[in-house]
Structures are given as C-alpha cells and as structure tokens.
Amino acid sequence: MHFIIHLLVDAFAVWLVSAILPGVSVKSFGTALWVAILLGLINATLGWLLKFLAFPLNWLTLGLVNFIISVFMIMLVDKLVKGFEIKNFWWAVIFAILISVVNNIVFWIF
Image 1 (tube, rainbow, N blue to C red):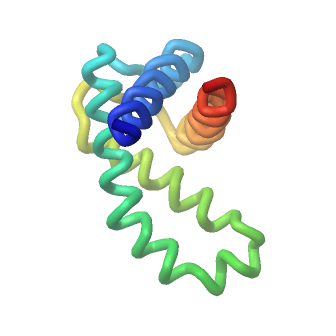
Image 2: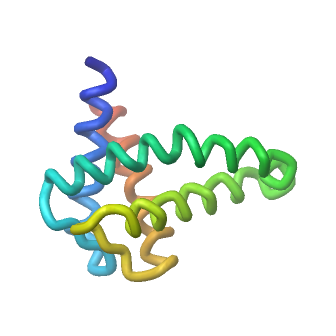
C-alpha cells in the first residue's frame, strides 16, 4: 500500500511540476504515472549502479554527483516515454529540484 501511495504522489508531483514549468510537458496524468514508474525503476537499477560507482567523486563533491545522476535519469525517461518532454538539461535540473520539493512537502503534510 505504501508503494502505491508513493507512486501516486510521485505522479502527482510530475504532473504538477509540468504544469508549472514551461520547459516540461506531460500529456496526461496517465503519462505522469508512467514517468513515475519508469523513474523509480531506473533510479533503483541504473541510478543505483552509477551512484555506487561514482561514490568517491560524490564524496568529494558533497553529493553534487548524485544530483547530476538524477538529472540524467530524468533525461533518460524523457527519451523513453512519449508524451513526456523536457526541452534541455537546465529544465531537467529545475524539474528535479521541484519534484524533490513537491514530494517532500506532500510527505511532510501527510
């Protein structure tokens, strides 16, 4: 049950942030749900592997490398999902920050 709630909150965050940012577009809430699922799967597999391999560099940069890896995971999902578009790297950076903020606010409230 916790997984489903987390997935729906992530999809809501994707949908909300895409409505705010002009450089990000999501076709529908179903697309946002699909983006949330893929983003979770990619971060749990490929993202985990990249973060593990980049640990020494991440330690030196105080976590900046983890953030950059997350941005690239978002850009990868952009290439995989039709109906989800991010115009460039900087929109992906802003999208990652806002997704994190929205998720933290929603989970803090509930």
